[in-house]
Image (cartoon, rainbow, N blue to C red; front, side, top):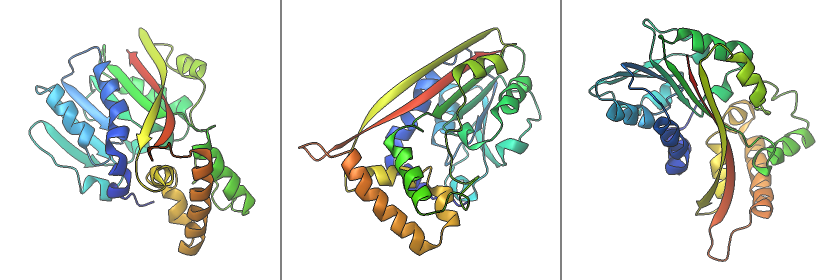
Length: 251
């Protein structure tokens, strides 16, 4: 699966805002921070500026994304899958913005991450939670209608975020857990902004599997469907509601 930084960052402000709000809810001043699924490193750099005395390490599996990341000062990067990641020293903060929904088996993943923390450390996570909205349902309908369900099994994400009570159970040993859900009403300009949004995220693995002609046909069908589901306002802007789940757990 190849990520395109320019496509992902085409709506950079909308993608970074939840991470900034998550960062603001971290209740400690950490000395060692890992940013899991850091992408091209914009938020990793902001973490470094927020805590200039800390060592901040961004971790991502995408060579293309990390090629855009810029190490500086207290910020550096490493290429690694989150599934294989294990820190050399126990971090005070494990931070992840819009990445862990790409990793399977949260029942094992979240307790494992919690166990990597130093004493009184914090796990701060944000994941998109729009799986039942037209952004995603229209993709599923088109894929299933075209008979590509089995072809894309394991590549097209279908509601990978668990229930809130499950995360609370999996993180039961922590001293405090703060979980909330926010819906952002994103105003977006340009032609077919909803298609542009999903092409930078959930459609990335789909594009890596489908032949180019099939992916083009799928994109055209989705563009039409999204125009109906999210019609532009009289001013020409499209309003796209995106819901996200936030979790801050203190060990």
